[in-house]
Amino acid sequence: MVRNFFFLLLLMLFSLSAVAPAGAAVQVQSDRTTLLEQESFQLLFTTTQPLLATPDFRVLERDFTILEQRQESRVQSNNGERSLQKRWVVTVMPRKSGSISVPPIRFGEQWSPELTLHIQAASATAGKREGRKEGEDLFLELQVTPDKVMVQGQLLYTVRFFRAIEIAGAALSEPELSGEQAVVEKLGEDRSFESNRGGRRYQVVERRYALFPQKSGRLRIPPLQLDVQSGRRGVFQLLDDALLGRAGEIKRLHSEAVEVEVSAQPAETMADRYWLPAYRLQLLEKWQESPPRLQVGESVTRTLTLLADGLPSAQLPELTPLLLNGPGGEMKIYPDQPQLTDQRQATGIIGMRQEKFALLPNKAGQIVLPAIEIAWWNVEKQSREIARLPERVLMVAPAAQRQSDSVVVSDKAAQPTVSVPAALVADKSSERASAAGELFAYWLVPVLATGWGLTLLLWGWSSWRRRHRVSTPSSVGSELPKQNHHAALRRACLDNAPQECRRILLFWAQERWPQQRLAHLNDLQHYWQRMGWQELLVALHELHRCCFATQEQVWQGERFWQQLQDVLPQQSLLQQEKLPPLYPLQ
Image (cartoon, rainbow, N blue to C red; front, side, top):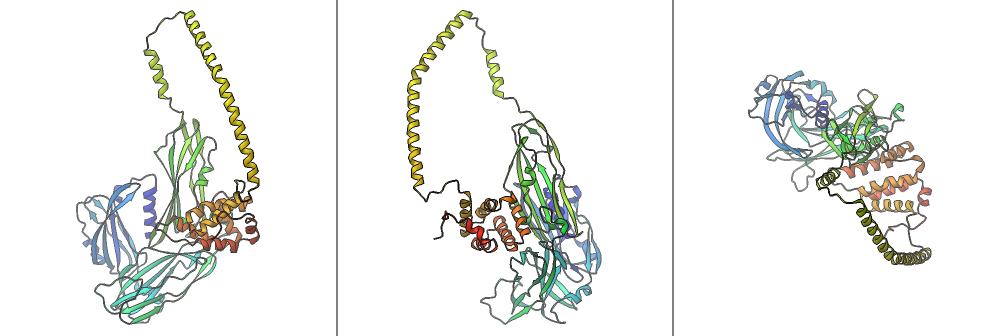
């Protein structure tokens, strides 16, 4: 339910119809996916419209115990437009299990929609807790969903720390998984709430991760380690990064190891260009103006957006090659840099890839943009589906008549008409032609002489340069593109420059495997996947992450270069070392 809300919210932001209905001015949601009886959670009421009246939440006391309520304000920026968002956070604890409806709340002239929540009984999960004894003051609880996941699909890993006593601090270890096993992404900040277990009240801190297994088989997640320092603090804080410099006894807890079955890619999807296991995937388009009006010589912008629930943006395919398969000489297409965004929620990651294209028609008439299709795997239905944009039939108007021509005509029309005898006009024309001919002959001889002299000098200088070039073994010309790309890729890796490495990697791969016809990095990724080079696939995924991360990350380029040397055949690498590298190691 919460997963559907976030995905529909993103669809509302990036779809063509940006106007929301009046009843959707206030949105309501819960901050957690699993809700238990006698366990607190938060109801979030959000709006971007100005509201004058203060909402009354007392109607919730029929089915909930209100523990706390507060109001927050934040400024959001979308496509250069800033808006003020208001949010009311109400911390509640359900009084019973089962289906409970959150009734509409009045916010001035607006009402929040009704929300149905499913509350699980506390006894339903009593036997699923790990490493807990009755009456313990401190314990850990793990939850992994789903029980079985597809390769490169999303696995949610949740750890909860329960405490019934005051502590000075706590430090929790991270899941220790290598990049070859799974890619680990932390989902937002830690959450804190209260829970009643066995008649005892606990303070709970919850931390969530999204795991993306990189190979099929059994994935083993090692136990987590929690160091808890005894003592009291004025205000309870969330899980700290370290416990250095604090006094008090330290107690160490360990969780259970978890094993998850990772399924291989289905055979029916092997022929697809991309492997995209997701819960939902949507392909949207937006034009600079709707409907688009095209004219010869004038460009128009088309924006394509790909949304995927359960996949990071770095794993989404490039949209440029899908659009470039359109009309040939009828229209020129100029792609812009893609924008990658990851929305991290409690339900997982929603990745977004957005690309803009400038379309410049070359001729008037009808132009047909072909349909765009992306095959993906629905992990909920376990079926192959197609995200599709239908073909677009566009009418291109002729180029507008130049205004300068009409101005010249009007100026001539405004001049007075003078009658001149035809013989006089002929005599004057012949005199001007004769004078021009004499002037041309006068300058022709020195100009030709100067041109021949310059030609002789250039021919002599080029002959000397060719002889000198033959005698210079260290000169490197443009006839060695393989050596240039190989050395440039090596230099970019050793300099830890991910953007430069990503730019050169495709040129290097095209020269290395010309028979594969690699047009984009996605083609290279699928070729490596067919070859079974899992280490290179993980390294390429890390390269994408560092290139498009919202915060600056350190990329280990030397390790990437070493993986290329270790995995790929050494003979072909040595063949590219026929000449000294452009940038030798110092």
